[in-house]
Length: 288
Image (cartoon, rainbow, N blue to C red; front, side, top):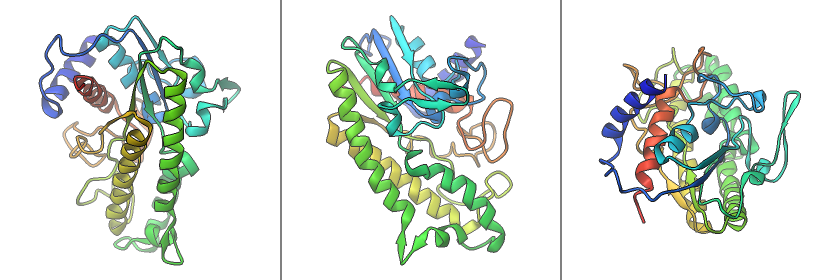
């Protein structure tokens, strides 16, 4: 399985990032990954049991990146459902508990990836649980955008603004805990396409696609701003995932649609997406 993962990763690297010289990437020895389900990889084989409720995959991007870097130690503290509060607070996952993710950091940690923000104030959950239900009201309109617009204000855009502040504080905490580490704020891949729609895969009203795409772009901007404000580095996944949204055909999608699969949760990354993100991070590490 691992061999097939890297065969696929080589193809994705060639497609979305520049060629990576063999000796170009600094030798990182102590890597820690923090994040939510887009980091953990629910239902992507093989699932880890430490704890099982976090739904971490042994083929998620932290695992693939650790192998690419040949890191001496790699700790994946990501957990499905996590938001920025779970950096400092334990997270209940079924009958288990995931400790505060910051507890994985050490003074000797020299690389940290942080993939958080989409769960703050239940941003993603509000979209994927509400918008498909409202589609029947106006299949060609934008009923979900209208639902979340109150007194002329887009309440979900307001959430993105609040999330930027949370991320800025969170990234500063990471840097305080591991001052020698290079800290990377990792963005999210696109769920909806930049143009068009695919109702059989993503059951949103036609007019809501563009609105959701704008929210995804706004969240990417918020993560980039938080990285800059905290002295961290932003890994753009939104831009390079153009054409790899859930509507993409021919196996090029990085994200699953609205139906659970044996190898990917609904509205979550597939294995190709994890390969793509690990390649983007690896290429980013070439920069000073």
